[in-house]
Image 1 (cartoon, rainbow, N blue to C red):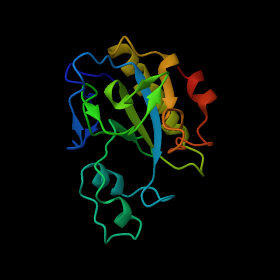
Image 2 (cartoon, rainbow, N blue to C red; image 1 turned 90 degrees about the vertical axis):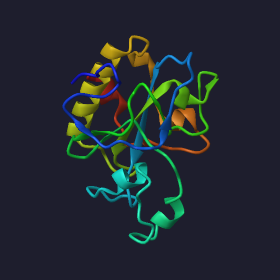
Image 3 (cartoon, rainbow, N blue to C red; image 1 turned 60 degrees about the horizontal axis):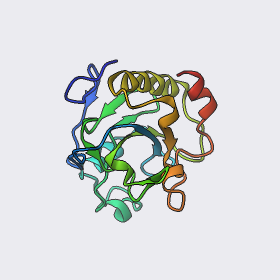
Amino acid sequence: MKVDDQGWLTAIRHHPSPNFDQRPGDAEINLLVIHNISLPPEQFGDNWILDFFCNELDPKAHPYFTAITDLTVSAHVLIRRDGEIIQFVSFNDRAWHAGASCFEGRERCNDFSIGIELEGSDNQPFEEQQYQRLSELTHALIDHYPTLSKKMITGHCNIAPERKTDPGPFFNWEHYFSML
């Protein structure tokens, strides 16, 4: 797995999202933020996440969607339960994944981070193939962006603790870090 000069992974599925903009000119990419997402909550395998990140979510498809259909968010990539990686935004651009956030005194984490969504929830374990693919992706990102390191990986819960809980208690940080 490699990242090309435009910030796109090679040999994976791209599903471009309109929910991004340019990073500030002086921003170095030096943080990975791990998230989880399932749409509807606790349900896996459909394409609702893709629709959500591309502003195409049908609010009539599920009652939960009416509350989120007007949100404009994205992540750089999604790792599905089966290990498939889908990229929505170039890593060189600012995806809208972290919201109001702070890491080690630095606010606006979207400016300097890469957002990785795992299809999952706070209430269920993640699949082994997700950890495998996340590890491969992390290695590719660290190889391409020299300011990234194992020390600069965190969960959404750590940068927005009053708002977010993901990737949740079932994310096995020890297992993930052992693969790096």
